[in-house]
Length: 173
Image (cartoon, rainbow, N blue to C red; front, side, top):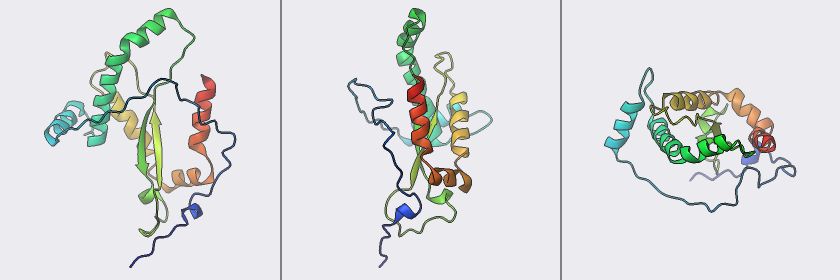
């Protein structure tokens, strides 16, 4: 029997988060959550649609599709705000979760309890004429590629880079 190791803090020590405002980037609008199911043939069709020099992964193809639908659905609002030259500057981010276990050097044993996860963020184009999604797939792949080495994981272990970058983005608003 393998006993779980509960000392993940040896990899990611606790940080002082007192300067982080949990409300940064959050809105008071009502949130809606929906679940969409895609069968294998639909995903294959999306992968073919977004393929160019690179073959997108299932996640990249689905993300590009969902982003393209978001852009179309919100384009009237974005255009109206641009025409009115409102002082509201909206920041649209796509956030994907990553498993850091295989990116760590050395990787933690399977006995470690808990998730070793991180997120990558990209700011894709809001141009509704960009239907093909190639730029989205490229940006997503570049963001994920930056996390593929142990040096990146070490920077995460040394500090609170995600929270610092989120705070900077919130402060810029």
